[in-house]
Image (spheres, rainbow, N blue to C red):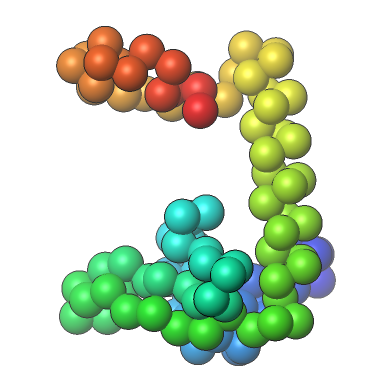
Length: 98
């Protein structure tokens, strides 16, 4: 199993996340200070918090560092930007790359 898939399996088991919840996780959902994960629009369209196992803090931080490095390299090569609606793109001109 690859490192990414192993980390996902450990999150499913250790945090009680459902598969789709794990796939939808964003950086803002991880709270390393309080060891919590916030799940948005989970079952029954409700938000909830669940535990972040201490054993997964370091691997998650390593994954985030790797993703940030990859994103920076993509931006350097001219990739890595996302589509934003016109008004939002004008209001926040750098948001599509951040």
